[in-house]
Amino acid sequence: MAFLIKRARDIWANLAALGRGPIRYAYLGDHTAIASTRGNSLLLLDTRDRAFTPHLALAGHWESDVERALVRLLKRGQRIVEVGANMGYHTLTMARAIGRTGRIDAFEPNPRMYELLADTILINGVRDIVTLHQSAVLDRAGPVKFQFNPRFAGGGNVVIAGYEDPTNQQFEVPGVRLDEVLGAGPPVDLLRMDAEGSEPLVLKGAEELLRRSPRMRIMMEFSPIMMGPRVDVPAFTAWLANFGFKAWRVQPSGALAAVAMADLPKAPHCEIVLSRDVPPGAR
Image: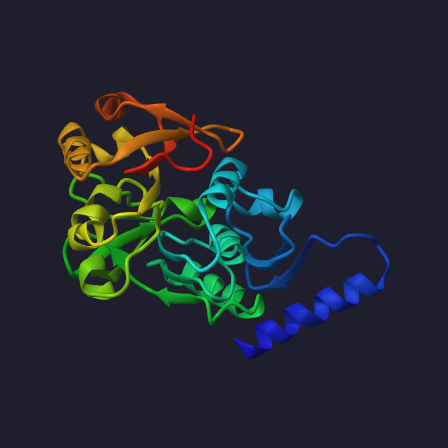
């Protein structure tokens, strides 16, 4: 790892010294590249990916709507839990927003993504802010099967019966519950999730955390089609409403548009924010 980090820094310095203007991307070998983000961070990427990596390599950003909403939601010193950190783009955005007095627990089960994430956290100097966990977050503890296609790195998911893709790489990863990992720690201000349909299971394993975090806001990918094989989506949204949560859909500008909880099971694939009060950027 030390060699990789030194090589990344050396390549970056050498390219910059050539006077070619802003440097956004450099290939490091072994399917790995480094890119500068719009937020002036450095991000390690898997070059086999066809979804996430091209955006970072050419434009320096990813999911601008999510990024804008996160910046509006967060304050210095807050505590965050991130489930599905992937290569760490939003992790870095949140780390910048909460500053040195904030804390993030970031979970990523995919060994390849975790490797890149760990190096990214290190070279950006935020290891004192971000604690990494190489595990899948669910409603139960224990080993689970995970599948992943390197061409679409963000689509890795916990395998469920009837939804196994033989073209994917498959391996076993540890599964954990947030209530067990975080124990009786301090309340959480934001839970951010992108778990490819397992988001309801994440929350089912975090009931105590939801109860002891009255100010918690949840930003999550919401896809009834992806969630449907795992839970009864209308029952899940009713369960959230019983906790006092209301819903807002993230707009392209990062603003939040209110949506009725009862309408969520019919919503298209989108990003939503759940909150017990009216969050910043809501309308």
